Length: 263
Image (cartoon, rainbow, N blue to C red; front, side, top):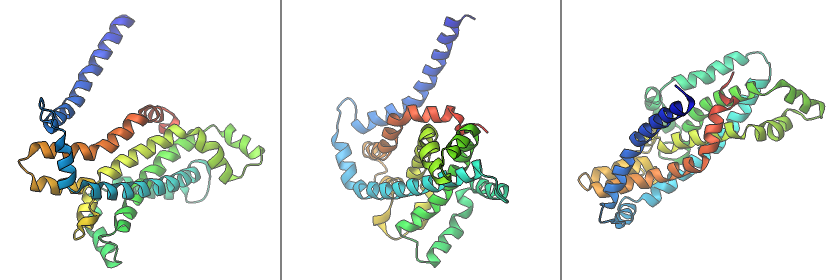
């Protein structure tokens, strides 16, 4: 098989998978717009009746704080575990790995009672703190792999220039690792934005603190047969994450293919 034929088959396979991925979204959009009538008022009706303004605000607050705090902690923890040698480093790393292996379903009930015992149920803190912990587990694993792939000569050059560990991290390694960091940010943003189980359990009495996916669930319960409004609401909730991915897709792919996934 020559190069031209191979490229043709590769592109054909990619087109098939692209159609499979995009076709459901086209169906959702067609239903929301009531094609061919193109009824854009469904989005306004869904926004108003579903109180998505409040839910989107809550999701933005929770996601922004969670991602920023988790990113800073992950970068510092990954730097320590990836570049420094100290007693107990392996055990600490295994603890972070344990956080990746425990499903949310296994801890959500005791977590709820723990949060309720300290008055953090039905609060932003109750939503944010558990998701920060879960995101840090992945973020530390991800950033440790990136920092371990950094050439030792780069670290030695920074030390020779008089840079301490803090300066080396934030002024040398973080700018170089932008693709890996942006990939981590995008993944944690998507996971946090789409989280459903934790808000469902923790926010059980204050409707004003519901996040967007949770609000969409309740909206679905009151509009079971109005498919146009349901599809419009689903597109409203999905729009921020899809937009973020569209603008950051180059950095996301670069991060996936860079040294961030190498040991």
